[in-house]
Image (cartoon, rainbow, N blue to C red; front, side):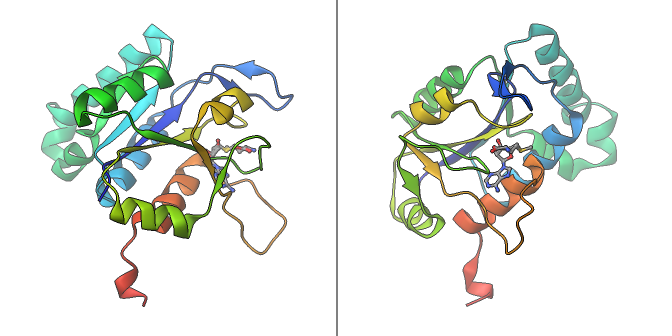
Length: 192
Ligand code: SAM
């Protein structure tokens, strides 16, 4: 099974007008995606922000839940947040995986939209590759209005967008991350 990592990217991301912005880290994204990452057995979860003050805020949140009152009150949350590492860039996350795993990860971007010029990976084929593989994989999730095209084009592939039956396509990144993880490494035996 390939070691699987995810990263929540706060810069560079797009705003509603398609401009490149930096979004603020939200406590909910840190907690919820950490809980999904722990549930699906990920090897790590990177919170990506170039803003030093934001990294300090996240460090304080993690301290509270790793060794402070939060850890005493909700010990299972400590286990989830133990996966979180704060980095300044996607490149730093990629390097951290390479250092830890001994080989650079395949990088998969995610988006609610198609992006020309990057291979599209179906959930089923990627799930099979993960099951059979050894090469680590880093899954990138965006904030704001999504990852910028350059980040997607720099990735090894774009994971196919989650599609439901309606034309409404505005999932939160927390929901999208959970759905992606379940489709990639969820236990299908229960449903088969
Ligand atoms: N319109 C944005 C886009 O195309 O990515 C969606 C922004 S959403 C608030 C933030 C992140 O959630 C996206 O960058 C992506 O990582 C994830 N996401 C949202 N909807 C998704 C979908 N239908 N399929 C895959 N990922 C999705």
